[in-house]
Picture: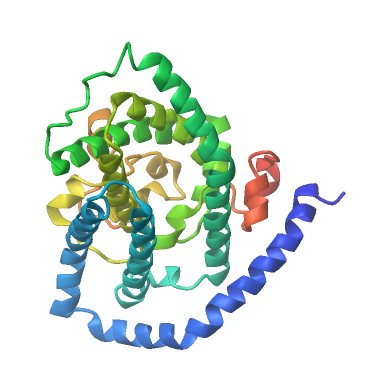
Length: 340
């Protein structure tokens, strides 16, 4: 009997294959040129400077740009500037991943990129049309009912913007840590989080690969407490943009060297262990931006002197769906026996 999920997914898989060819062909010559240049960069001082300096430089630049975008409040300029910043980050990350890759085996997967583009567009549409309005309505009702009794005066609005952003990132990441950990340890929640972990390579753009259910639940989980605290919208925006930059690095295929910062942030090095096929390694390093909560709650995995493997994915389900439609259906048509 044919699999109904596979039948539904077939036309979407065909569309992804067409998009994959459209992505691969125009950039093949550029990729080949960057690959040749990357071999010449190996062992050079320039590569070392880039490996050490690119993370703090992009983080500081993102913070400064975000401050400029909210100097007159949240306006249309803020959102247009955000789109431009994302485009600039792509122009930085994409060539650097070929010039100084952590793993050359992660460089080529146009079909995976097409899948991630489907997720990016689909999740944005879901958030605008369904998730966003639901979240906003819920927050407005709860904050209106509860904020007169709790939350007033909790947020230190008199602090500097930088201090508020740091506090918000740590507070936000505390909530994200427990949600992320629950998705790995509770089988029902793993159904939708497995969609993110099915990727067999990491690169800057597949941080966007997640099931809409994951985003919907987590947005309620942490948006409501943060709204109760009363942090200004400008602070939330700046912290969110900085968090997005950290997320791009976390998934990037760039051989960065964070040094002491590796013990502060949820770094690419640590996140590669988190995506390991081995459950003993994958159920660790849950922090999204910072690693403090993993350190406090005993889930950090960072063996001294070791390098994480580039063989990632879901080790016990190698036949997990690969295309966008199959992944969208996977939590509702859960068939681990067929995927092993």
